[in-house]
Length: 253
Ligand code: OOG
Ligand code: MG
Image (tube, rainbow, N blue to C red):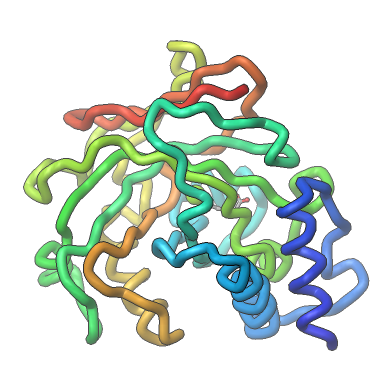
């Protein structure tokens, strides 16, 4: 299998905002191979000057697993180019068929160098924010197998962060919602994320350590969506809310 070639196909699809056929239709892939392709594909972004910003987890909620028909937690990488300022314009033309989902974001207060668990994970939180993740599968019709989506960096495309809040802010079981033009289109609880979003931080730390990823102070971790994702359209204002947090929003142009 030519990993470089497959990584290039996905990287180019993202860069040009043009969908491609699922890799698994022509190349049988296992998960290790899929993560190897993801890593090469992200390496191409780093070579173009993008900077590593953090990690994201996917399929940490039942709503997401059911929506996409995929049943295992996955992880991918976030770069600075994916970061849009809160309230900014999001140009639809940069994406293929983007969807938005509400998430909780963690900012690491200090380097994670060894395994962490639920008991001590809170010590590593420097800030908490509500986030909108924009996912944009590079595959036609937003359809994929688990291996396909992993190779495609878990559909990562963009993210917006609300203002960082103090780590003491309550976040483990709070109402969360996604609004389009002021109307709630998805609602759930942060508890939908692995029963407690802190579990996502623990999992991200484990996966990051196992794979030699940077988990230094200031790294961002997106815990995974609390609800299903919704397609976004030109002219819409998208907002993610979590109780007790200032919201995150973007305007689709
Ligand atoms: C894969 C990414 C899943 C999440 O928060 O669950 C994800 C996808 O749905 O395309 O980001
Ligand atoms: Mg997500």
